[in-house]
Length: 409
Ligand SMILES: Cc1cc2nc3c(=O)[nH]c(=O)nc-3n(C[C@H](O)[C@H](O)[C@H](O)COP(=O)(O)OP(=O)(O)OC[C@H]3O[C@@H](n4cnc5c(N)ncnc54)[C@H](O)[C@@H]3O)c2cc1C
Image 1: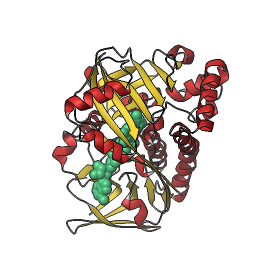
Image 2: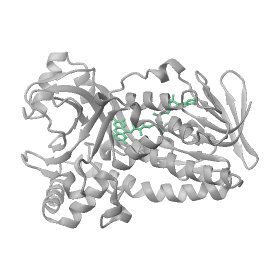
Image 3: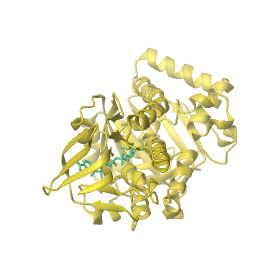
Image 4: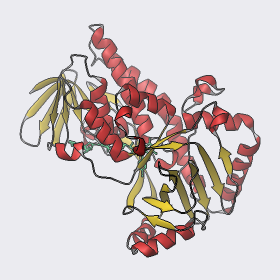
């Protein structure tokens, strides 16, 4: 088989990349190990994704946003960062950024379904589902993929969208640094007595970190808890009643009684950043490019940035009759995406360290940072620009992606 562009992985990033090429005339083959039925109706994986204003616009451009129902979208009006037993915390409101809201929340499974619907019936796109890429070779002459059914696929350009542990990236010889945070994140959709007022909480309590992400229903949120894996396992083993009481107590009763609406799901926390995003005839997008720690809620937001940055370059070169697979096209993407993501990737490691550490110096530094946040207007504007990822009209616009919403380590 032969095509222009082969994409490995039909997660949200791979699907969005395929969608971005619609109408270009390029022949695209998308290879995914899961079955098409699962892609059309993805199971709920408990992840609720915070989306910036920029991501909302990109999703609208790709035809995803209109496919999310009203109930699937939560409004993120404001965010509150709490430390220890603090009651007021540091509040970030959209007015400071000249917006109506900081962003939106949508379930990962809903985003996946919308992305699948957006590519359905797309001319020049072939989906090979239930098909694992077992071998890959890419060099100046082109890319060759060996599929699990024994077929061979040849492409001018190979795109890896096969998760942060991308086998395709490894196969072409790109090294990646991995950071195991030694923590696991538990996510669980819960109903609570006290309404969330469309406010996200980031709460750094001693010995544990918590977050609350407001969903569409005023009394339903995603509760997020980060702890060592052995403690997460203990929580997962609890009966539903025990779990509900335990969570209400962790939130200090501030939300009243809490009831879980879905089984809790655990995610071990590992950050991954490759040495390069590209090689000859090869590029990475989504988590395969940058595997973020969810503390700054930016994995998919970065995934959309990568899709937009690379697809625009490919389409521009194709329209101009230049080779869209050239090193010049790929390197220019590499430079832009690195500049857009590296500062936040590194800052996230620092934040996760600072907020997962209960020793006295770290606690003092946290208090100082929050105090600074309350008093210093430039600091607040910088945070707001990061929260909305919409820094064009803000001072610090050039570094607008360096600080975003916090989540617990
Ligand atoms: C708890 C949690 C909370 C998060 N919260 C946020 C948030 O608030 N905001 C945000 O922006 N991001 C968030 N993220 C990150 C976001 O979920 C990811 O960035 C995004 O889902 C990654 O999409 P992807 O398409 O790159 O990769 P994936 O979703 O991992 O998809 C990869 C696909 O490749 C396929 N595949 C893999 N190997 C092969 C192979 N060899 N052959 C064929 N197919 C293959 C897989 O089956 C899969 O379908 C969060 C993540 C977690 C874990």
